[in-house]
Length: 542
Ligand code: HEM
Image 1 (cartoon, rainbow, N blue to C red):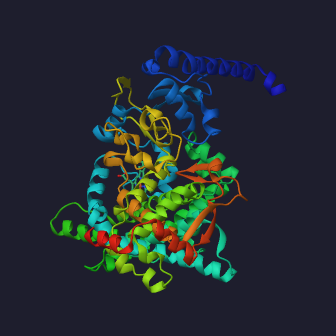
Image 2 (cartoon, rainbow, N blue to C red; image 1 turned 45 degrees about the vertical axis):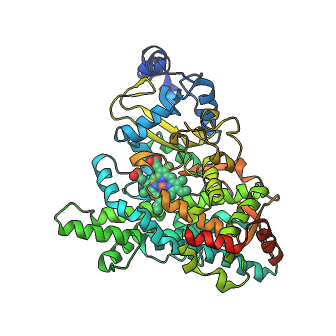
Image 3 (cartoon, rainbow, N blue to C red; image 1 turned 90 degrees about the vertical axis):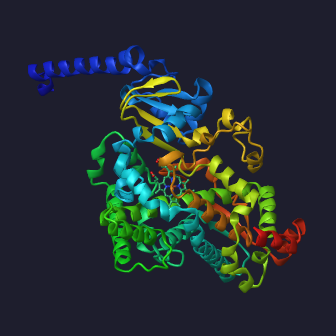
């Protein structure tokens, strides 16, 4: 009390209070409402001192934006604490400007990269400008349609292994039904797929769940309350990463595991890449050697290692979450599941055989093309629309630009919320909030690709899109040909507990009641479809 009463502290405190009052009045009232060039943009009502932050952190990511866009228009301004202006964009022409016409003016802000870089490395996902263009070009051969086709036997093999492991567990339990948390299994499956298809490495996490690399990603995506708070704080206070907190220790431990695995993979590739190797990194190493011989710029060892970290991180959790949500949606829409199974049976009758050799014919599967199943295509796209695994992305303008007719100054933070855009009636009609795979057959002629932002668009869009779509289809085909999925009513609806950490996943995973199809059920599916002969003829022609 004596210290506070001392004249120095009294006057210092008073001065500090006065400065704060002036600062806050200016930045939280005068600037946003009377000076900011963005004051003409429709603004979500609220007091800029704390802005819409309480609404944002207490709701599923993107859900408040759905309402704002419907109420105030396709471009809205809102506030983060202390008057920080933010834009949310759902305007077709503005999305084209950001993603396609002028993408390099919209890098990811440094604060958004900070925690990602520790886990994903400085690969193509986090590179900007010219280094990004250079890396993207160097990676394109690895992600071409032909390269992905060559990798499909791996997708099928791992999908088969997953379905066999579930069968093994059911046989051990002497039951044909089991409650399964499918997301964890799918995470391991897609991790093994990216390991083999991406780098020719057998990570084997499906059969060995405790393998360190899988454990590393479990640590990164832990959802305990303290990690969530610290993660939120990191957006404002960059140095939270130095706090001696469990989340920071876990991320450091995870980073070390991922980094050393990526280093081992790239070393191995540099030592021995064979002409017949088809994995993505082998193609890139071969391309690098060719460029080196021609005296052109190549990717350094560190850049290659960081690409491996990027593919590991960006390429497995995303697809696993997409497939897990799809299985959940099929479990809550049994009629859609039945129709899809029927289509699968029409194209892959041998998958419904009780004979394991007929079913596990990977060569035959690899010759088929999962893109020839229109309803499967609709179901996967609709699931990725309804719950986009990456629900939003954030950008910051380098230079001033015009979005949807509004002047947007340099250094403005701009959000694209797929989880909002995908539910707007302007793009998807009155049933935007319904899971309806049929919508894809009757999209209006003027439907814009920007209404589907699951993979973003343009040169910063997902390079692994074709990889992910093919992988997703292989998994759904394999699993549905062997199992029926029902909602496990003993657990809360996973849709009520979506949490966001890079990927939008259910807090407790996706728990399903999984039942092995009986021989009679498999036969009855066929009865609903066309004859096997007719379908096989289509397949061969295809
Ligand atoms: C359903 C699965 C997937 C979804 C929903 C998805 C979504 C996305 C999105 C939204 C972006 C842009 C992120 C941003 O800039 O903020 C992105 C970028 C990227 N994705 Fe995917 N992705 C999926 C699967 C994959 C797979 C399987 C791979 C690799 C095999 C992959 C590799 C990448 C890479 C390298 C980038 C960075 C591209 C660049 O900036 O040039 N993704 N993805």
